[in-house]
Length: 202
Ligand SMILES: Cc1cc2nc3c(=O)[nH]c(=O)nc-3n(C[C@H](O)[C@H](O)[C@H](O)COP(=O)(O)O)c2cc1C
Image 1: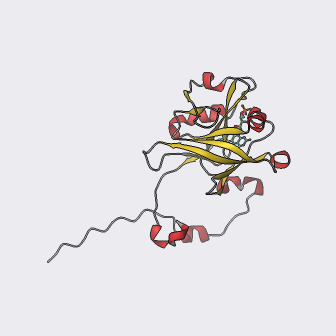
Image 2: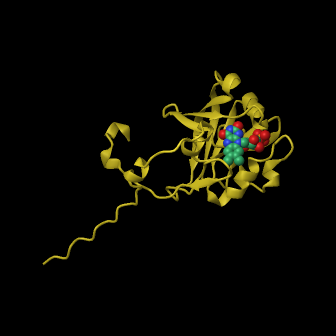
Image 3: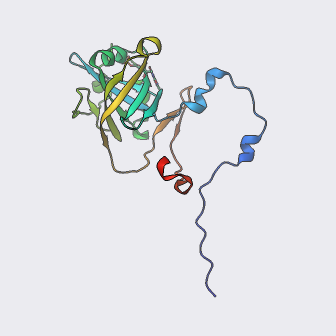
C-alpha cells in the first residue's frame, strides 16, 4: 500500500462569506483605505544643484510599452516644481527596512531640509537622469516626464520609466502600503493563480 501523498497546504484566503456579510456605509473620503495601497515609493529629484525626496502613494501603472506611470505630486510640495522644471525623477521602492525614514521624508519639505543629509541616505548616480537613486531601496526606476497635459489641472504627472534597477532578491519584497491615518499594511502572502490566466494576459 502506498502512503498518501502529502497535501500541499493551500495559501490562506479570506472566505467569500466574510465579504458577503452586511456592508456598512463608508465616507467616500475614506475609500483610499481600500484602493490606494500600491507600494509607497520615494521620489527623488534634482534641480539647480539641489537633490530632494518625497514620499508618494498616489501612482498607477498606465502602460507596459512604453512603461508609463501616472503620479499625483501636489503643487504644495517642493518636489512638484523641481520635477516639472527638470522633467525627470527617480521612483525608488523602499521596504519595511526604511519605514520610519519613509514617514519622516513625507513629513518635511525639501524647501527647508536637505533630506538626503538629514536622514543619512546614500545616493547613487542614475544612468539616464540627473536625479539621484536611493541606493538602500529595493528598486530604482529612472523616469522622464512623458506628458504634462494634466499637471496644471490635477497635479498629475505621466512619466516614462527609461531605466530600471532592481535587487534580484527577495522576489517579493516587504513593501509598505498606506491606508491613511498613519497606518500601513505590509505586502505578505504570495498567491499564484498563473494557471487561470490566458497566456496573453500574463
Ligand atoms: C505615506 C505618505 C504618502 C504620501 N503620498 C503623497 C502623494 O502621493 N502625493 C503627494 O503629492 N504627496 C504625498 N505625500 C506627502 C509628501 O510626501 C510630503 O508633502 C512631502 O513633505 C513633500 O516633500 P517636498 O516638499 O520636499 O516635495 C505623502 C506622504 C506620506 C507620509
